[in-house]
Every structure is written in structure tokens, then in C-alpha cells.
Length: 192
Ligand code: CTP
Ligand code: MG
Image 1: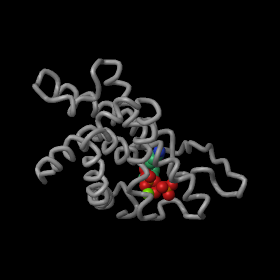
Image 2 (image 1 turned 135 degrees about the vertical axis):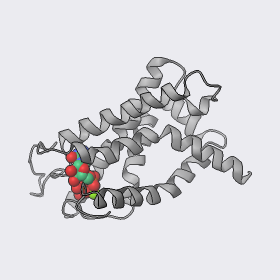
Image 3 (image 1 turned 60 degrees about the horizontal axis):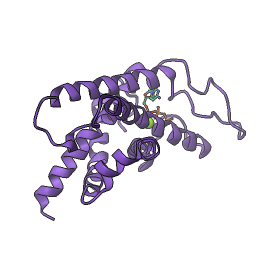
Image 4 (image 1 turned 45 degrees about the vertical axis):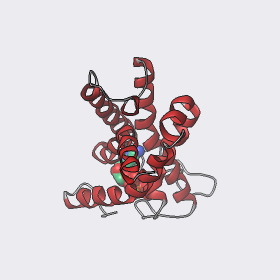
């Protein structure tokens, strides 16, 4: 396969996953003092998710990602863009997939926090690998379960999987840049 072809597929895959790259970082802006776990602890006596996972962050981040996805649709609407730039073939599918991608990011992030608490990591402690990929894995799982044909068609079929590999390579870089910006402008306590 040509390098250019791989790059195009990666850009297309990245475009389709953009709502997740919006919902995850914007959750920081909406974080509040209403923890999703309600302050409750697991059987090991440690918090289920911790104070870093709040309803404000979950809802605010998800809605911002959905809004971003809808704006993307407006941009691409009425252009000659191929199906690989579209979230589906009809309005219902488009909205559903945008919601799954946007929510999936924070869902994956929540599952990661659950395991971080079990492994005794304090809130905000960096766990290389998990921190970068939790959101993409969350999205892939939700799409594979609730939007399987579209997921296979756009992300796995024929040469499409190349795009996912590309995104996996680019994600740690984007994650790092976003966190450094968040730290510099004072919305994140740590630059990771
Ligand atoms: N945030 C939130 N609700 C979410 C996700 C994120 O309120 N569902 C906010 C919190 O203020 C959180 C910040 O965004 O501290 C950064 O998110 P993240 O790095 O995912 O959380 P951590 O503080 O690192 O907590 P954890 O150790 O559980 O990952
Ligand atoms: Mg963190």
C-alpha cells in the first residue's frame, strides 16, 4: 500500500473519531463536585471511580462532543465527500454514531479510572498506555456492540484498519499536546 493511501485513511479515521477527541478533553471544563460514583467505595474500600469522574464532566463533555460532531456534519453536508467522511447513511445513524463516539470516549475513561482505583492509583496519577488509549478502546467497544456494521465498514474492512493503526500511533502525541496546553492554561493540575 502506498504511504499516501495510508495517510488518507488515517485522516479519514481521525475525522470520524474527532467527537472523541472533543468530548474527552472538554470534560475538564465541566468537571464538578458531583462524582459519578456518589462518593461510594468498592469492596476493597477504595473509591469506585474517584472525584475525577463527575457528572458535570461526563454530561458536559459528551454534549460538547456531540455538538462538535453535528458541526462536522454541517461542514461535510452537501459536499462530494465519500462515505468515509460520513457518520452514516441516514440521520438516525449519523446521530447515533456521533453519540456513541462522543460518549464512548468518556465511558472508556471511566472504566480506566475504575481499574486505576483498584490498582491503588490516586486520582490524576498518570498510567502510561491506559490514559492514552482508554478513550479509543471505549469508543471501539461501543461501536462494535451498538453499531457493528458501520464500525466494520469504516474501521476494519479491506484496508480501513490501517487508519486505526495510524490513530493509535498519533493519539499519544495528541494526548500529550492537549494535556500540556491544559496545564499551561491552568485547567489541569498536572501536564499529563
Ligand atoms: N473530568 C470529570 N468527569 C469526567 C472526566 C473528567 O469531571 N467524566 C474532569 C475532572 O476534573 C478530572 C479532569 O477532567 O480531574 C481530567 O480528567 P482525567 O485525566 O480523566 O481524570 P483524572 O483527574 O486523571 O482522574 P483519574 O485518575 O480517575 O483518571
Ligand atoms: Mg488523568
